[in-house]
Amino acid sequence: MLDETAALTLSAQNLTRHYGEVVAVHQFDLQLRRGEVLGLLGPNGAGKSTTLRMLTGNLAPSSGGVEICGIDLLDKPQEAKAHVGFLPEIPPLYFDMTVNEYLLLAARLHRVPKEALKAALENVKQRCGLEQHSNNLIGTLSKGYQQRVGIAQAIIHNPDVIILDEPTVGLDPNQMREIRQLIRELGTTSSVILSTHILPEVENVCDRVQIMHQGSIVFDQPMIDLRQQNTSLESVFTQLTQ
Ligand SMILES: Nc1ncnc2c1ncn2[C@@H]1O[C@H](COP(=O)(O)OP(=O)(O)OP(=O)(O)O)[C@@H](O)[C@H]1O
Image (tube, rainbow, N blue to C red):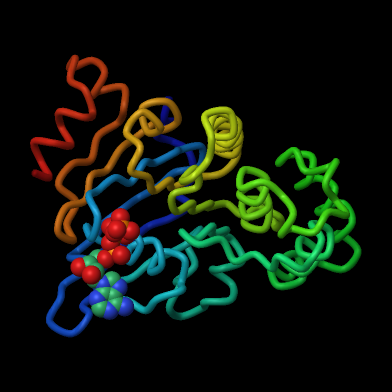
């Protein structure tokens, strides 16, 4: 249940992105609070990945702005990005590194202080269930475990905002359940944005849902309201995006 008094972690105003003539995202607004898990839904090409890349400072908006924990992402990118963890659609993994080597690299890139590296590594492996795989090459892990490593690199610096682009795609049902459990846990201490095509995933994991269509947000509601209206997310999604 969303705590309306919790601190704002992310605020986006009028984010717009053009690719030439194509308006991929149009005037996207979002205020996200600590402890909130937001599901971002939309058909292919709706503008979700473009939005997430702008929110994480990986793509410059054509106009509009983003603040992370009150820090302007365009003015102070390094400072703002220190509060964000991102798992892109294609996880940025190096298959010929071990889990330990890769996570240490991720921690250094996220500027975890030298004296805190060991504790950060142990903590993230424990949270993501990777303790038994410390010295395994990432290329030899199953898809589910590779996805855990992708999430681990996104959270090793304890970010306030965690952004996950289709984190359960290609996983088997057991792996999906485990990753969803992990996302719920992350949502207790941070804010999480989860982009997915899997509607039950949003119903299971998220406190709030936004639906994007042709670059604009066409639906934004707490899940609890949706449940009370006795409407399924699927019927809302189909009505708004067909
Ligand atoms: N680099 C690019 N150059 C030109 N057009 C692009 C580029 N990236 C995305 N687009 C266009 O912008 C629109 C939004 O794309 P985006 O990838 O953000 O959608 P999406 O909702 O993430 O889609 P999917 O669910 O298929 O990943 C689409 O029309 C897409 O073709």
